[in-house]
Amino acid sequence: MNRTRYLFALSVLNVAWAVGCGASGKLPANSASSPSAAQGETKVTLARTVVTPSEALTVNELFDRGRRRFAAGRYAQAAVDLETAANAAPEQSWAPWAYYQAALARDELGEFPACAENFKRVVHDQRATPERRDAHVRLIRVLVYLEQWSDAGREADSFLELYKDLRPLEVIVAKGGRALAELGAEDLVRAERDVESARSIIEDQQFQIPARLHRDVAVVYFALGELRRRRAGNIRFVPISSNFSDQLEQRCQLLLDAQFAYSMAMRAYDAHWSIMAGYRVGELYAQLHADLMELLAADSPIDPERKRLFEAALRLRYSILLSKAVNSMEHTLAAAVRTNESSRWVQLTRDAYQGLKNSLAQEQAALDAIPYSREQLLSALENLRQNQVSRAVRSRAK
Image (cartoon, rainbow, N blue to C red; front, side, top):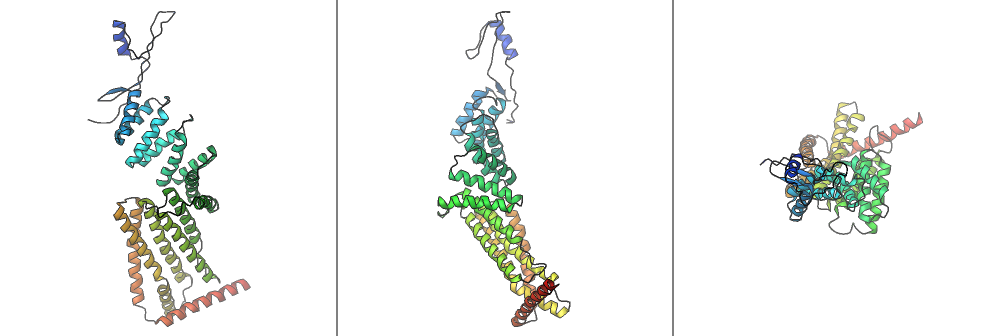
């Protein structure tokens, strides 16, 4: 039978029932009546009823059945019952708890958008209910997982304002979510502040010591990797400056620091975060290679022979970056197969991997065709460095 629910919130008086009742003069045991002093009428109040093609239950009956189904692990049916009951009677004292249990059921089913909506109903209910605080923490987690990072940041702000007696993991959840929102807004200063604040708690509580990290801790390390990746990307090599070597060293150090942070996130052994982190590591190496190859257009000699020599020297030195990117993507895709992960990050990794393999093949073909010795190529790179220094000195002199 079609399970689509047709909800009817019945009025205070069920007219058809009342007509029959008027003939017999009897009231059901769960009804309330009071004689009208003026007209001698009888008032009848019925429990609100939900009618579907297969049944008609009061909201209380529906709520109770949803609770029983949840306890029995029948999460899909429990979620429908609890949501239907709460939607039909949001004023009931049990409505926030029904939404909370429905959210947990949706979480068990992996239905995270619906899970988030139910948690939002609990959090944004004006009544101070016992489950509201935990629902708020769980809501931030789900929004972060769904990559709705700006929403996660707003909920984290609200949570940190509402509650002052915070437990360590609650602070980690809130500040990790807020840091990702700040990174999305390119506010690296505030993101760093939240990440470092969360890391201080992680270290104080020694949450980073176990081989398998808590998922909330992994989120903070992923945010740290994102912060370092953004800062690394801000170091560009064109136009070429006299401190090119220092810039390259700084960029490489940030790359390694970001890779360390992403590898820490992978220690949660959570497929979702592991795939995201693995993709980012490969992207770090690929982007560094791409930025360095911009030097070909920015500082390529006019003489065709010198231009070929210069290009060959750059390819020889930096082709290793493409190899590292390809290896990272390969490991990430293998992890996705092992864990049956199918998020959008898997497709991003698959697309990037294919593109990098093509680039690496082209790079290798170009290297195989090089007519120069290794000594000639190293000499060309040294000449490039000296030319960069001389150009920078002349520029400052002007």
